[in-house]
Length: 192
Image (cartoon, rainbow, N blue to C red; front, side, top):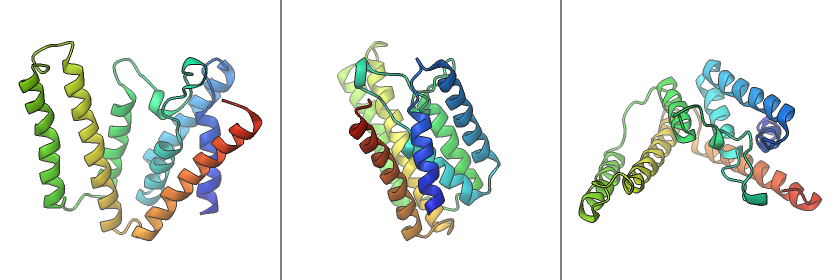
């Protein structure tokens, strides 16, 4: 667990490197790419842990100074491929590595509701028919996909005994503690 904390702190620091620090940003991008490459090659347990660190350690949006672009996975854009697509692909690879056995009926039912409701609301409000407003429906559907993918991923990792529930929660808490620890250090030194 110490290794996970140290890797998480290191990942937090690297993923917070701003774009205006060109050499450091470049090196941070290489570190992020190497972490994703390791994720692809590692066994299912190490791969899942690496994915959790990448997802939970990375900063989503940095509001200081009008929004700073950083190395974070949540801010990487490759042509038309946006960050949520990258994260979705990584989560699906983790599911494939861990062999999804069976998705609970409750999750399938909730998934169906989350998929159908934005479309019904979009048709009733007319936003599904207007290209400019369709973005709201797509955002709702994207939220649903990420939400359900997270539930299925956690369920699969626990059911397949990749982790026990206790191990899974410990890892998530350690990663979140590392993120908050780094943010507290930033607060103390007046950075960000």
